Image (cartoon, rainbow, N blue to C red):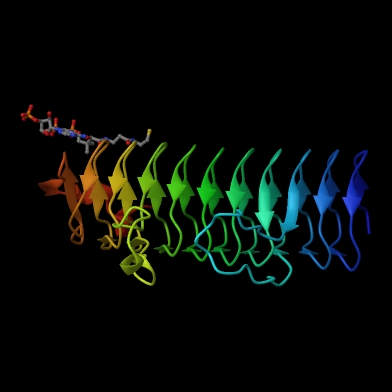
Length: 236
Ligand SMILES: CC(C)(COP(=O)(O)OP(=O)(O)OC[C@H]1O[C@@H](n2cnc3c(N)ncnc32)[C@H](O)[C@@H]1OP(=O)(O)O)[C@@H](O)C(=O)NCCC(=O)NCCS
């Protein structure tokens, strides 16, 4: 099987480990987790954690999620946490300190940068780049080849934790294939960024972004079309 274990590592019952897996020190892999071939799990990573609810959280209950599935060739960085119910397709790279919550799917070849938080119930496409410390709010859907720059903040609750009306109205963001969000930008709940739509650094996105359009500023408005040579279809 060719599996390398570090010191103080805990592997619970019924964990499935593929061939050629490297596991660092102090790693915890919870019961039933499925780990593919050629996976690297670095020191202090926690794999397959069930979510817990804060005592005063508005959430009614936390359901038990099925075991995590980590595809072939994935790397899980130091102190990263991958929750139960998450599915990482092959060749996903999760950098140090990142968190991937329950019921999140991450597509093949995607990079989840250092300190990134992907909240629950998100779908992330293939070959995306989520850069350092960006925040992907719950119930978001990202297509393929989506780029999210460092420090981007997305949001899903316009009621900001007040009023009963907010329940059932939380809406994550949608970024279609090739969409890009520049450094430190903020997107309001439910925003849709169409294919190759691009948000400039520091923008606050209050309206949907049209296909192949570049928006800038607060509130973000169209500056021009995305240059031809930057469109997804024109990449090598
Ligand atoms: C979109 C972007 C590339 C535009 O930059 P640019 O091509 O240099 O812009 P221009 O020089 O054509 O600027 C046109 C006008 O828009 C303004 N502008 C440009 N970027 C702006 C921004 N992010 N916010 C507000 N206004 C902006 C300029 O000040 C200029 O206004 P002026 O004509 O009154 O002086 C740039 O704003 C950006 O967001 N870069 C992305 C950086 C990033 O996040 N990289 C990934 C992580 S490292």
